[in-house]
Amino acid sequence: KNSPRVLMHIDDAQKILGATDKASEIVVKTSDPLQIETVISRIQNTLGDNYTLYSQKLKVLEDASTNISFIRGALNIFAGISLAVTAVLIVNVMLMNLNERRKNLGILRAVGASKGQIFRMVLFETLLYGILGSLIGAVAGIFLSTFMLQFLGSAIEALAEISQLSLVIDPTTILTSVLTGIIIVLISVSYTH
Image (cartoon, rainbow, N blue to C red):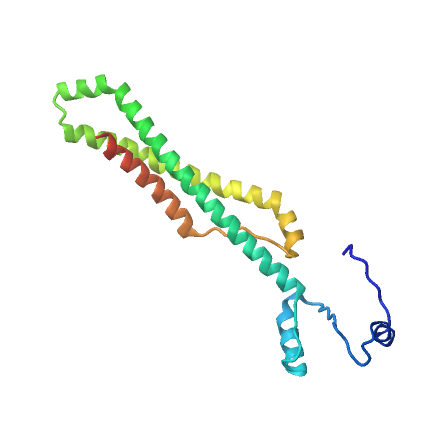
């Protein structure tokens, strides 16, 4: 956009460049960006394979796709580290919770509760925490994603020349996140037992 450009008749350009009856580049602009590949295909069929056809917009989209893949990988690494730290914190909280309730659990044992009953009670409580926490986290994640899309969406749309971004909520992703949270709390209970 900011690069200097000179527009002139092709005959004048050929004389200046010493390339009579030749052109080094032809720029074609389509009115519909979705038709870029169709236009390229038609030009290729007309001119043959002796010419290199290039789409600036498709190149920008390919670069944006590569950048998004890199960012997605970095975010996945960050999510994995966060998940590991969260798992350690949950185990730590469960151990502290059981240590604080040691007297109460001892009283339950003294009045006749078996180890299995106490374990099931702690398991049920932890499972309830895991389900509630995972559901709250999934809903908060959806709201945060919506906010981030509104906040960053216009910048991404301008950079990639995309008309509109939309949030895609995949039920598999939500189910996976909820199940991961539940599995982490179940592992923490088995670790504390």
